Structures are given as structure tokens and as C-alpha cells.
Image 1 (cartoon, helix red, strand yellow):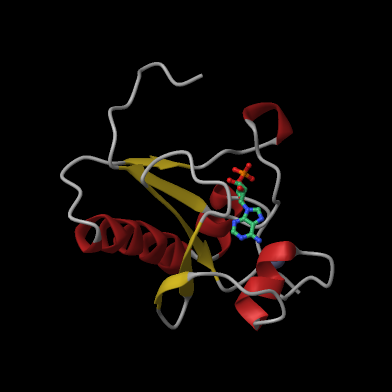
Image 2: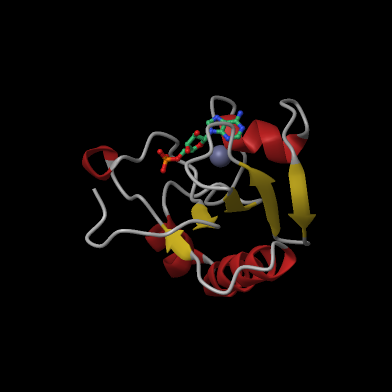
Length: 117
Ligand code: AMP
Ligand code: ZN
């Protein structure tokens, strides 16, 4: 069924507590934790507890949870006192997605280039 935990999914295991993470925020529908390989002083991943392969699939199936991800991304930025920050949804291997459970990268605390690499 859509959204069910997947046995072979790293982020489902973080949601389930089988793999540890530095969790900074949690809601009924989302978890936010620090990226293990940070690319900025603040680098937090905000994920839905439900399993969807990417952010667009999540938005189609659970639009309310997709909105929760954005709300939580702002809360992460507020918690870390960031005036500016970047929210990234890598979608597809060619765009750098390596974990196929929807997640927002919240990056901040340093200058950002545009266009991104
Ligand atoms: P993406 O490449 O967009 O799929 O992002 C996946 C992110 O997950 C990468 O930035 C990884 O550094 C991060 N990551 C992988 N394993 C862990 C973990 N166990 N705890 C926290 N972050 C992780
Ligand atoms: Zn998953």
C-alpha cells in the first residue's frame, strides 16, 4: 500500500528507530534529523514518516504531509536562526538523489551559489 514502510529503506529505518540519527524535530507526520555528511553549517533532512520515493509522489498522495515538510523546513531554519536558507529536493539519480524516500534538504549558515552544481 502507498506510504507503507519498506524493509530496504534507510530512512524508514530511521523513522522506525532501527538506525540512529540526530533528530532535531518530530511531528505526527514528519521527522527532521541532521545529515550525516553535512554540506553547510545547517544541513537537516526533513522527511515524511510515510514512505514515498520522492517529494512529488508524496505531494500527489499526501498533499497535507508535503505541506508539513515545508512548514517543518521553516521551523528548522527558525530553530537555527537562519535568515536565508535553501530547500532542495533531489529527484532522480541524475539529480543526485541517493535515498529513494522523499526528503527535503534544509541548508544554511553559509553563502549559497546560483546556479547550484
Ligand atoms: P540525496 O542524495 O538527495 O538522496 O540525499 C540523501 C542524504 O542522506 C545525503 O545527503 C546523505 O549524506 C544523507 N544520509 C545518508 N545516510 C544517512 C544517515 N544514516 N543519517 C543521516 N543522513 C544520512
Ligand atoms: Zn522509506
